[in-house]
Amino acid sequence: MIEREEIKKLASLSRIKLNDDEVGQFQKEIESILAFVAKVREAAGSASKAASGEPDINVLREDKMPHEGGIFTESLLSQAPKTEKNYVKVKKILQND
Image (cartoon, rainbow, N blue to C red):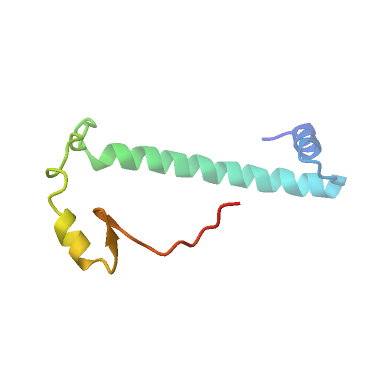
């Protein structure tokens, strides 16, 4: 159980002024919050272990180019309203100050 002095110290660090009744109220509330957090941690830990009996392995693909560069450039540029030197040209919206 969290002691009243710990609640007062926590309130001081948080710059919250508490009277004796509020200290008692926070003591009960923090206890229930910590109990809930412990249950969530326990459930999260057991769920991840139970989901797979196999050890975790790297399931990500290797970094590599999915296709050669420039293969879709013509197709993309043909669909753009304006182009310039193999780039899509757009209206300037930012001002340089």
